[in-house]
Image 1 (tube, rainbow, N blue to C red):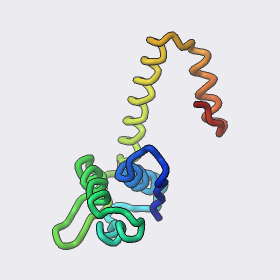
Image 2: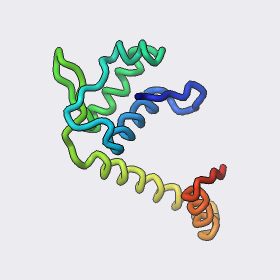
Image 3: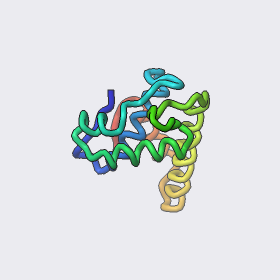
Length: 124
């Protein structure tokens, strides 16, 4: 269910965090559904349990999951998880565009980049 790119520059705990958000937004993980126990998931992925624990802790701090002592971690019943993530992404895009403007990147270049990404292309 979870996929990790061990060659990515993105830390594994962030990849797990993003995996959970993505699976919730797709409806694969539903409110009150239990996540795999930390040790079990760590073993399945071949990673340190502390890494899984850090991802779970960040998800809990952001209200995406909740923990029940002795029972485990569960997907939050918040219906606005996807909206929260959309808002976070909108903020990041806004900051990136503001920085691009400061660096003198033309609006047309930004629009072309967005079009390329939407069409499935990749521009670095």
